[in-house]
Amino acid sequence: MTAPLRLAIVQMNIEAGNPDANFAKMKSKLEEAAALSPKPDLIMFPEMWNTGYALTEIMSLADPDGSRTKEAVSNFCREHRVNVLAGSIAQLRGEAVTNTIHIFDRDGSIIAEYSKIHLFQLMNEHLHLEAGDALGNFELEGTPAAAMICYDIRFPELARKLALGGAKILFVPAEWPHPRLHHWRTLLQARAIENQMYVISCNTVGESGGSNFFGHSMVIDPWGEVIAEAAEEETILTADINLALVDEVRGRIPVFADRRPSLYE
Image (cartoon, rainbow, N blue to C red; front, side, top):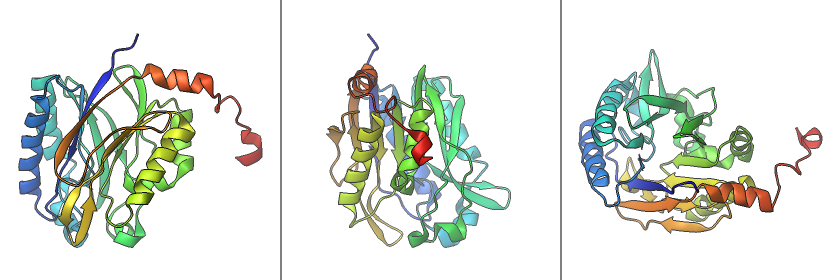
């Protein structure tokens, strides 16, 4: 039987435009999460935790090639022997800034990167960020997994493509604001139900950059049941997930076998 995967989801407030303060908090939260008992297998952070949505200043605030993030998190992973999905950061690549996830294994190696491919026009992301052009599939200790970022969850075809690529867990760092809590919960549960996989979301809280964020980070199982959910304050949400449940659910309701892609692709 597959051992459960222990998750620690860091739901935090982000100071828009203050990378130094956010890095200090990130390091503190990493230590706090690693000290939990039982120790987590994976620690996860929210979207754009290094800068928040200070988009008009983002070129000067973004982490060049993600080097500051990579060094800090890689060293931490090696020391504590834990996987880290380092939320997403504003990362400077040449003359452009991307909204990019880095995923580290227990040795501190980067096993995957993903840059947000759907930019949210209501927050002017498209004016300040460059969209990614690759999917977020990766393997976590032998388990196929995938990542997307915030607004990406409104695109069911992306989640289905990741599931067809083998993903059994979908990680979703986000900065999802009031008043759209109903959309947040419904879309995340829908992605879990229709793709029969775990959905792990990490949202921010508090006021940042003129917006208010409601938290409600969640762990949702392949039946669409919420097995852990945070409230609206800073916290580290923990949960164990049983990956064998994915195969069980997919076996009981064979959605993937019953697809007729020739009619709708």
